[in-house]
Length: 268
Ligand code: NAD
Image (cartoon, rainbow, N blue to C red):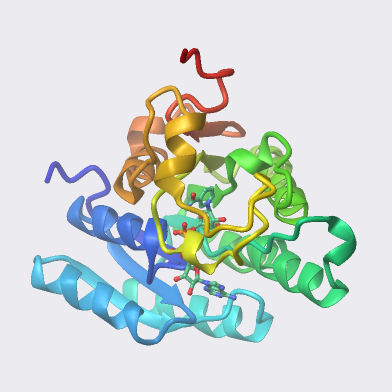
């Protein structure tokens, strides 16, 4: 541990699993007090227990990012417990895939948009005032490679993640205009081996095949490095953006994708 975020207070949404879980653990290991928030009341407290066992500071809040009422309560609670807020990691998200967009129900479209986009909107709406009082900070929005380019069969997901990307840039501009010392950036993971893949219904992977999605298999073909990423590898990028090492970085995007976005893989 090198104390890269020593003394900072961080709120991480979707902190009970995958990338969010790795972010919570790394930020705590590097000295932050971490508010782990999620709808998963089983895994969330486990993450907190592991952090505490390792000597870090964390607490869990049950928190559906689509509920404005809950945002108000959670931000007030976190601020009361830790005395401010320096880092917001708006990470909670999900994907719904369909072989053709004509099969997407309006209810599913709205659910996905509510979590991936409304949740990010509510996060900044309710955290920025506290961060402004704290005297600055870093907002990190979890987008995706699907927020930089299209994703067959995940078009709705791609729309939300593209929205997150430009929302981050726009809020970075707003914060600069306020002169509030808050930096805002988006992170764009490629194929990362987390539980999210098991939650995407089989048969709609863009491959046209009716098989469960194996991230490792997909990444072998699609990335320059020939493998899926690990949640910890995304957490390292988030740590950089959360820490003062990135003090000159705002309004931009950090792509962590094993080279997937660089171009076609030159394999014979
Ligand atoms: P994950 O499924 O392991 O974790 C997502 C977490 O979000 C879960 O703990 C879940 O309970 C929580 N969540 C879902 N709905 C919520 C809600 N309404 N309110 C609060 N929490 C909620 O997935 P992950 O792979 O760790 O994904 C994290 C983020 O990274 C997501 O935004 C995802 O879109 C993005 N991402 C993931 C990948 C990947 O390959 N894994 C790639 C690009 C982007």
